[in-house]
Image 1 (tube, one colour):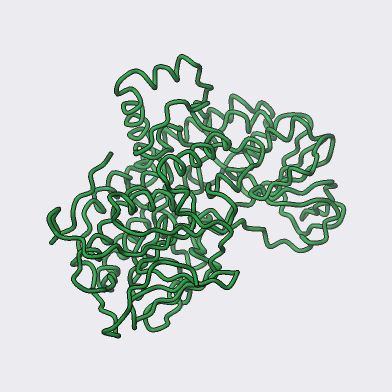
Image 2 (image 1 turned 90 degrees about the horizontal axis):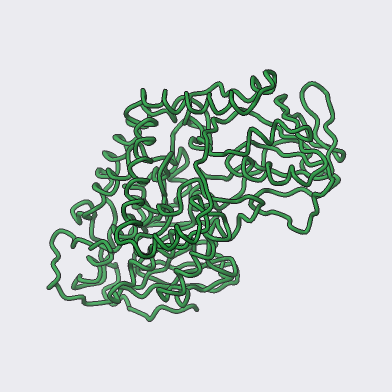
Length: 514
């Protein structure tokens, strides 16, 4: 397990004067990882608020056929809980959800979770230097520190197409899969060709009468070196010293090479492009279909996808790919710009998520009553993706500019948890109640650097869900995971202003709902 360094000005001998109360919003990978770190050695009193009825985050919500991770399981897992009995190299949704639940149980994190609690708003009090969190049920919670960990891929996005509500049959987003809808023999229209669609289309094609895939732009797809693990594999992982660690390190460094191709060493992208072109050429023999599936944008500009099944599925007789723009949805199906009506019995949206609308739809008010979403009107930003000027003692997990074009996001979220722990340690060792707020000049300098580097990355070459209308890239980190870990290894209290409560008699109530 990684040892957390002590912040500047602190040492192991410094007394812990209080246990800060921390509210974590969200019980997915990010929220549970933060809770694990903050409860180690009894540092803080942590409560996790989860709107659903169980832990799991996106892996609880996304149950569509074929749902799986596109990062090898060995790396897409916590460093403090190494699993040796994965079913596949690239784990499928049930296996990942089981792992998250097992982690919550093994480390006592489930006891911290209050399910069925939807947070609607949070506000910071300068009088008491505390956060008050409001919920849909009318309950309120108070805490010293607020840690939103709702992620970037938790709110499904529907396309702005006229007539969506007029469709005569069942319609649903891939993240809200209707398992009660039998697709056997039916005509299914799929809108979108993103990471979810390339997984569920090959599966539903096997039972559907016909599948029509509506493609706005062709994605780059490279082979997925997946395989099922045997009992022999699992025995070796469990018994051979250092094998899992060595595999994890090898996979990590490989994903970092892909990261270099997307950011600072762009010529490396030619290798990825060649691999993707060869994959298309070898698996799609029909020249007309191959032309329709050939991307026109640089690889990585939009999310690069991994699949061995996508191209073969699209080449089947019961699948059509339509590239004409959709003009409307009607009760009978989907109409395109050429005037054609594509009849359908079921409509499935594989149209992604509202990734750039960070922390929405919650209302977050900081110092002086400032509204977070107004402050982020031209695009979300945060120092190291975690701290926002004007919002003391609020630290975001998987916040702005911490998404990755490659590698495992869990590496980023775990590092954020370690960084946040150091700041909570500062609060715990303080002689008085106080709050930490990142200095505006520190945030501005950081943001200028990040935006400059993103301007030189592949993500500036096209419009995608990584960007907002202003053109600002708000989701992605412009470097490698190693760099992010280095820059966040030690939290420097000098980056933060210390704010005392305006009321000298500010109370320290026990953490509880009211």
